[in-house]
Image (cartoon, rainbow, N blue to C red; front, side, top):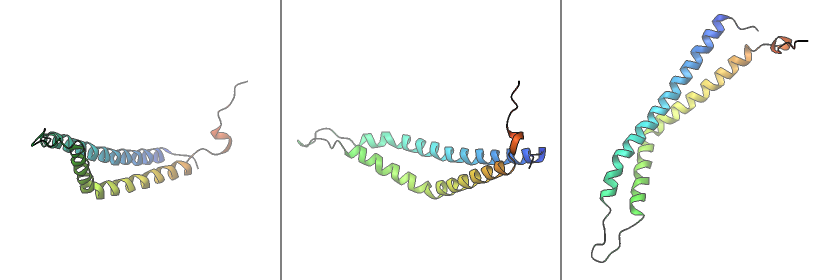
Length: 114
């Protein structure tokens, strides 16, 4: 079936909706990054030097960072999951729409000049 201007408009709307969903996912990533960046200096403050002959725990700062990151990711996981599923549905819908209206047969092949 040949694509009409209406089909091109519909396809562009579908692609814009997909871009918007992708932007929302990127926004969530930036928010998590911003929050963990804010927490990082607080994690480093807990690092202590030698106290009463006891060496500092080298892995404790990294462990606290991982725990905080896991907590932040768990908070936004339902929203990220929903947006990821929505993005997959939008990709499938766009692919199906493009397949339905792609040129068929010889019309799809560019003519070779002789």
